[in-house]
Amino acid sequence: MTPQPSDQSGFPAQQQEPPGLTEPMTPEPDHGERSYVGSGKLTGRRALITGGDSGIGRAVAIAFAREGADVAISYLPDEQTDAETTERWVSEAGRRCVLVPGDITDESTARQTVRTAASELGGLDVLVNNAGFQMARRKSIADITSDDLDQVFKTNLYALFWITQEALEHMDSGGAIINNSSIQAYEPSNTLLDYAATKAAINNFTVNLAAEVGERGIRVNAVAPGPIWTPLQPATQYEEKIERFGGDTPLGRAGQPAEVAPAFVFLASQVTASYVSGTVLGVTGGKPVF
Image 1 (cartoon, rainbow, N blue to C red):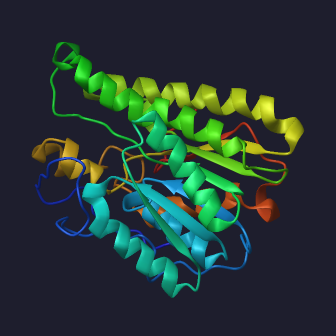
Image 2: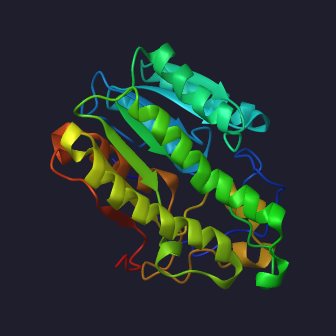
Image 3: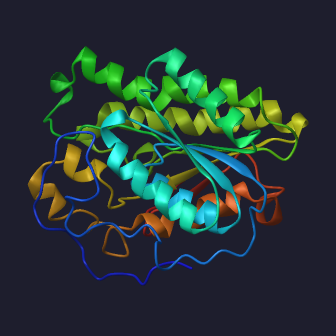
C-alpha cells in the first residue's frame, strides 16, 4: 500500500517560486498513483481536502478515492494544472472529484469553499485541513515581515478556523476532522519560526476541538509529517537545503506524500479509528513527536 523506500537523502538543487507546482520537480513526488491499493475503509464518505492539488493533499485524495470516498479539493487558481491531475486520478478510481479553486486566506472564500463542497458532494463527512504555507528563505526573525506573518498565519491558522467552523455545520456523528501539523511543532527550525508557531497552535487546536465536539460523535486528530518531498520545498527553501533535504532523520531520507496518506486514511475511517480522537500521529522518518 505504500511505496518502496528510497535510499536518497537529498534531491538535485532546484528552486521554484511559490506556490510551486509538481511537474517541474526532479524527481516528481510519489503520491501513490501506482502503489496505493484501497480496501473500502471510506466507502460512501464525502471529504473536503484543502490544498488537495499536490503533495500530501494529492496523495490523500488518491488514497481516499481508492478507499471509496468522493472528494472535493481546494487550491489556489495558480495550481489549476496540478488540481486537474488530481481530479484525473480520483476519477480513474471511480469516484467523484469536485474542484474548488480560491484563496482561502480570504474568509468569505474559505467559508464558501466548504459550502460548495458540501453542496456538490451532498454532505460532508471528513475534513482534511491540509493547506499550508512556509517560507524558509531567510536568516533571522528580523527578516519576517508583517506580510509574511499574514500569509503564513492566514493560510495555516485563520483558514483552518474558518473552514472548520463552516464544516461543523454540515457534519453529523461519525464525522472526522484531520489537521496537518508538522515535526516543526516539536523541532522548530530557526528559518521557520512563524510556520512552526502555527503548527504548534494546530496541535492545541486539535486537542481542544476534540474535547468540544466529542459529544457530537465527531473525531478530531492531526498528522505531523516530517520532511516530505512536495512542491512547497523547492518553492520555499534555498537550493542547497534541497540537496540535503531529509538527511537528518533517523531513516536518513525524506518521505514521499504516498507514505503520509495512509495515516490520514486511518484517522478518517470509522473502521480503523472510531475511538481515536485528540491525538497527533507522527509520520516523521523517526523524529519524535512528544
